Image (cartoon, rainbow over all chains, first blue to last red; front, side, top):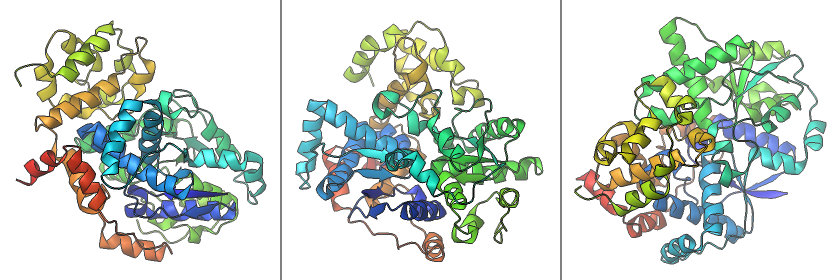
Length: 298
Length: 159
């Protein structure tokens, strides 16, 4: 099983420890990850799409062409990339005039969108491997760990193009959390946006959304949060630190990228994961699951 | 802008007019939770009442997080988040996009990434045993942006 790995920008350039965990877990599961030669980043579904949607689609289509030339489906590690590439893939397959317009542009750079591949998020690839097979790799179940899943918007919406899980009451991520032996706790406003899209214009107001979410997660008695997107990670892990500094230590909720929890459940030593780069210490969680914590930098 | 742009006229006629002001969009909107003056229902009302110039040139359209919750919950299929994208695209053409948004396009043209490449991240990647960041040949990217008439936005900004 092999995929064209689409890294994007936030994971490799801002939060590379997320890349470490994703590569490790996919390697354990026997998935081969192929580089995409000269792929750019997706173009960001928020900033770039807001400036010019057609250019956003054309840049995305160029990236899709690279995977088409490789003859491989794309695996995205970030929900922003997932939304961008899947929207372009689905829309250009559906809408002929738009495809012709984009192909006219792409022909100038020697490329053509053919519509021969699919774009998949990490959970879809795990589904393809098979939940039971993934579970068979869990050697160190995260028993007793209470996890609040945060799906993130761009994994499930807009549902008419993404078509992955229910857009308002999704369940797939929770099932994948439970497969590690942890418990997925229910909490209020589970689908509340992390607010990353607001950061560019008003970081303080974006902080309010982070604080609201952390409040609901704490109220539910969760030990930690789990996310699937670097923008959500940045909001809840890094911005939580800002909330903490302003409110005198009110919240201390570790946040994990799902592959990090999978790695821990599969026996990967925590020091191999770059957990020291988290800005909200994951120590309490490691203790709870009986592991020693790596030295912290925060 | 004297006349209403054609794209906006079509959008209002084919989508916004169907809004019956139920407010499902406001109730589910994360930005409205953080910023009470942000109200997508009122924005649709304004478009129906012909206040498009104020809406297009105002700050409010840039506060949407594009979470697409309103898109899912709207009983009339108005597709508000997509209307916001269209409004932002039109405002950009008029030179009214906020700096933070324009930066992403400049970064993309310069490096092929919307996030900057820093020395610190190269060191972190090394510590994590990850491969070096690939330098992207941005020729194709720049050409696409140019052909899509996107160059004007970039050149206006660089002066």
